[in-house]
Length: 82
Ligand code: HEM
Image (cartoon, rainbow, N blue to C red; front, side, top):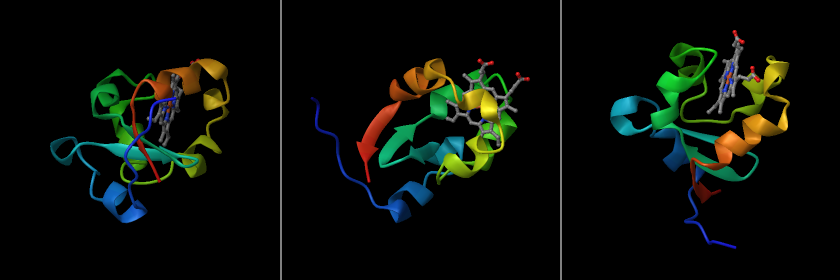
């Protein structure tokens, strides 16, 4: 399995806008979703609400994400681990 760099939540929080890259976490995984923001079916504004932090509080509100194909898509953007 590939080994990823390890980041702190503070480092993730510095990536909250497309200019600074948009990072999110899911579990203990870190993703750079900058290139996905404009492709999001729910709109760019919604993804940016989670920028710099955890997806779970938002995904708990939008059950559309509880499908395997969503996690498969997210996996393509993985850049690190917490
Ligand atoms: C829909 C992925 C973050 C709100 C979707 C869909 C995907 C997706 C693949 C379509 C699912 C389907 O119809 O089968 C992602 C990824 C995210 C993310 C990879 C993070 C990188 C968020 C956040 C919110 C959100 C943070 C809310 C604050 C929505 C909504 C829809 C949606 C409302 C439904 C859009 C519609 O069908 O009209 N998302 N999402 N998403 N997402 Fe996200």
